Length: 240
Ligand SMILES: CCCCCCCC/C=C\CCCCCCCC(=O)SCCNC(=O)CCNC(=O)[C@H](O)C(C)(C)COP(=O)(O)OP(=O)(O)OC[C@H]1O[C@@H](n2cnc3c(N)ncnc32)[C@H](O)[C@@H]1OP(=O)(O)O
Image 1 (cartoon, helix red, strand yellow):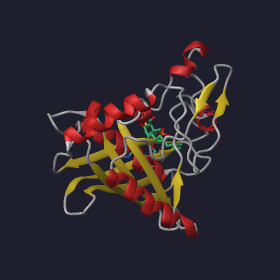
Image 2 (cartoon, protein in one colour; image 1 turned 90 degrees about the vertical axis):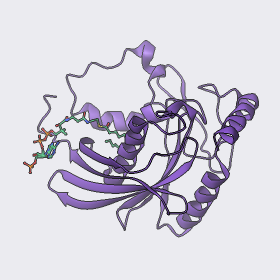
Image 3 (tube, protein in one colour; image 1 turned 30 degrees about the horizontal axis):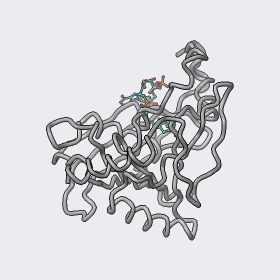
C-alpha cells in the first residue's frame, strides 16, 4: 500500500510540481480562482479530487457526490488560505489578537491544508444538515507518519477535530473546540482511506456536543472513536 502511494506521488510531482499558487487542473466542479488581499493569494477548493487520490477515495467521493444531487447532502468546499468571511466572524471576539503581518499573510495556511497535494491531509467533508451529521473521507499521506507505516496520532486528532468542528459549525457563528476526547483503537495505515462519521448529539446553550468514529472503507475496522465539545463564542466576552 505504501509503495503504490509513493509511486502515485512521483507521477504527481512530475505532473504538476505541486507548488502553492499553482491552480489544480480544472474540473467541472472547480470554481474560478478568487484573489484575496493585496498579496494576490489564489483560492482553490482543495476538497476536490487530485491525482494523488486513491481509487477508494475517488469511488467514495463519487458516491457522495451522487447523494448531493437531491440536496440532502452537500460537499463542503475547503481552502488552503485564510477565508476572509471566517476571519470576520472571529475578529469580533479576538480584539486583542495582533493580526498576522501583511507580508506573511500569503504564507498563512489552514493546518490540515498545509502540505502539497498528496503528502499530508487529503480529505473532503460532506454534510447532511437535516440529520445533523457529516462524513469525512480522509487519506493520510506520507508526511503524516508516526509509528512507521501508520498515521501519527496528532494527525488523526487534527482531522477528527476538523470533521467534528464542521459537524458542529453554525453558519455565521464562531465556535472553538473546548474538549476533544479520542480513543485510538487500531493504528491507521499510512496512505489508506478512512471514513469519519460525525454527528451532533446535543445542543445545550452555547455548548455543542459531537461524536464520531473513524472506520475503514469496508466498515470492518473501527480505528478510533471520539467525542468533542465545541463552544459558540459569546459576543459579550470580547476580552480574549
Ligand atoms: C472550530 C472552528 C469551526 C469553524 C467552521 C467554519 C469554517 C471552516 C473552515 C475551516 C475548518 C477548520 C476547522 C478547524 C477546527 C479546529 C478547531 C480548533 O483548533 S479550536 C483551537 C483549540 N481550542 C482553543 O484554543 C479554545 C481555547 N478555549 C477558549 O478559548 C475558551 O475556553 C472557550 C471559548 C472554549 C470557552 O470559553 P468561554 O468563556 O466562551 O465559555 P465558558 O463560560 O468558559 O464555558 C461555556 C460553557 O462550556 C463549558 N466548558 C467550557 N470548556 C469546557 C471543557 N473543556 N469541558 C467541559 N465543559 C466546558 C463551561 O463549563 C460552560 O458551561 P455552562 O454554560 O456553565 O453549562
